[in-house]
Length: 151
Image (cartoon, rainbow, N blue to C red):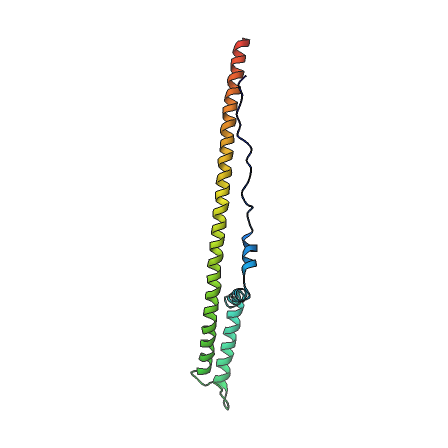
């Protein structure tokens, strides 16, 4: 009788897939968390609407004030405050974006590792299917030969 050959079972020796979110959360510093929080707040509709309302109140109060205008038109003090806010907000948002690009690199590397593992396992599955095809061919030939002999 012909001996059939099947590949050895796949050992699954690769390291486990890590949760990228957990890895990144462990690595984040207090400054990075603060930068992300500031970027999230400043880049939101509630912040934009609140800031617009405050600016409108500032302009209206200074425009309607008869006796004491703390910032008369063209609102130099308001311009100073907005410039200071922009001077601090822009670098903080850039820090958040830099951290996000680092996160993207970590995720891309993790995806690459998962793809390598998947490719290796698919190769093993295809080898096993090829062995099964060969075994089925031998079995079919044996059954066909047996059927011919029985006629």
